[in-house]
Image 1 (cartoon, rainbow, N blue to C red):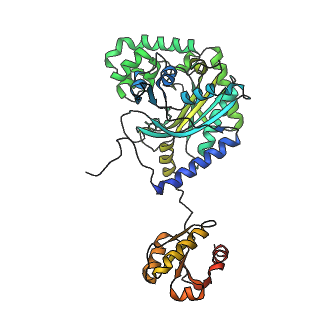
Image 2 (cartoon, rainbow, N blue to C red):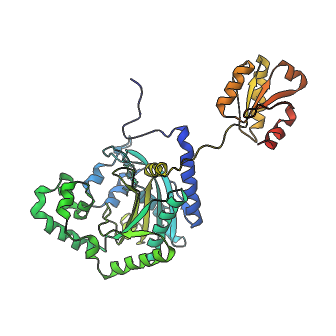
Image 3 (cartoon, rainbow, N blue to C red):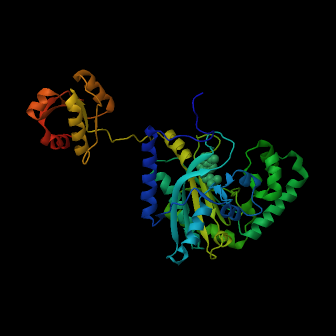
Length: 419
Ligand code: AMP
């Protein structure tokens, strides 16, 4: 049997690397211009970091999805299932609360969740993550949404759209959860198994269910936005005011919820139609209280994460397909045995300036030129006995067929002038 990658994981092949570079360059440009700095944290943390951030009432689903293990020193470790907890652990550990606020940190890399695998849902996947720490004002929430929208726009997406909502303050949330429990308790038998569990632990999450049987029971029921207290409602209105003033398009989604119970007030998602049932490219919200829960100072924060694989899917739907422009400038062909060493030395010297490849054994001119063609090089440089005598290479422009002898010392200038 052929060896295989673990189910739910995938290789990023060389042909796919230009897309990665393209997206990360867009992200870095957009976020660094807004004052965000990149933070790279380890892919695993003490399990405690995630356990604390997940909290008691959080979904069992979240707990179950974590890849946790004991290492040889008996330490309980977890492969990160999300960025926020690790980023905030680093924020606290390195005393970043003394920095001017807000502190904006972005990250990108792999995450691990033991999920049911389907289109857009993998066990190792990648996210881009942004945290804006230290500001309680709605301006920070609005900026987070604006940056999420802009990052995707900068990458080439046009048809993505933002859904904005609010899960309210803790008391609003508690009131809504109580309401849902009361409404759904008599119909609990008709709920899906997951929703039944959610109804016990975090009733709001029932709204997230994709099962028709659950959605049928929710028809006519109130949404979290109907339970907002004065503070949360005013906060949402302020966020909207900024987004309207900046011309960031969004729609209000009264039913938006976030999986983890540390979220409060602003919650948002960005969607793209046409990438299957999992249409969310990303989401985020405000998480006042989380830093304290992780052992840090009582600082508020707001952040988001975007799934890189889903963005790639969406970019493909929009016809954005970056390719590698970096073709070899020159492909060297040794025509006899002594030329093998000569072309390798030349290649090593020229690589200070341009990309150069070569055959690894003597070739006849026909076969050598074919090889040069396949490499995608602009020029082929042939070297045999007569070229050696004259201190030149026969240089052929592969597209036009034009050919000329070029002195070794002139080669670089020749290539650069004709690029
Ligand atoms: P979350 O961290 O669950 O809020 O997810 C944020 C975004 O990450 C989602 O909107 C997806 O784009 C992406 N995402 C989450 N889970 C997965 C997964 N298992 N496989 C691929 N992408 C995912």
